[in-house]
Image 1 (cartoon, rainbow, N blue to C red):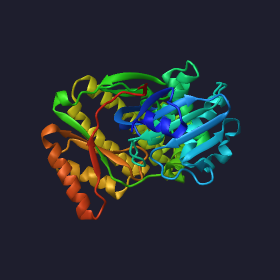
Image 2: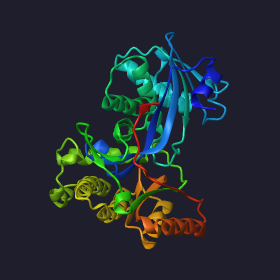
Image 3: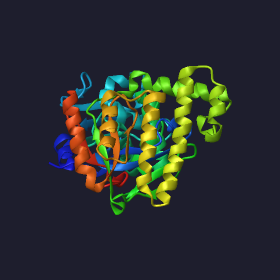
Length: 389
């Protein structure tokens, strides 16, 4: 049954529309977005799909095809029913998974937009806990649907910022804006070069097949949870580094002055975080230059450098992610790195087309030999951003 058909079975009437928003994988630029830095994500074919109708009675009803049994104490038949006027970050945890779409409604209303309720049915193919922005996809698809249904007239970047506010202030995860911007603004066949300070962006053609290359996503099946404090601790460390260096954000620390800047920092962990962020901003700029020059293969070593920085300076990798990178490179990949928030999730591998199958086989064999769960491996195809279906 289609998502629209499931909506009708749930709520007794056809939805007013169906929308989709993708997950994303980040090519380069990790933990830079909340430092006003540069990132370069691309949208995946995997999407969160929402069938939605507006309501005018102050009631929000949300249901997910991917959640069995709904939310304890808050659902009847798996449908979570909420009062939009009573939405409050202090009680968001009570809504469970529904906090993501509910947070979007809250953020829109907090910004003065007249959202008076909705019926929502969601289904997603974005792997959860894999570092591929399943939560941002839920937020953006909800925001786009409500923007259309209530005629709010918000731009894609404005929707992304409101979706980020939902995750920061309502759900309680202090993420940057990259995930929501990628989901809202990406276009097919391109990567999104985003300046997170002013949200200016450029669509960069990303046709690896034309250069005989493939980008693989390796989902380690190790679930990560960014609400556990590790992400927030690193963000706080970056902000402490910026204060110590007298800048608004680490984006303002020039790469050529990195060594001198690090010498001014007394705390070892803060030095490591600053070194990662400043060097990863530089890696984004190098990657853009290589892609603009038509030399995507040369991005491989940049990915390897990025992984080493995430592993050693930011310390957000894990044995499974390190194994992907080591094994893929030994099997003939051009480069690889973990992607996303870390502590599990996914890695990306840049590989010549003719070596892709042997690299996949090598990674699968290495995981089996280490006693790890079999990874999920698929090509990263630059896909369309959020849209009405």
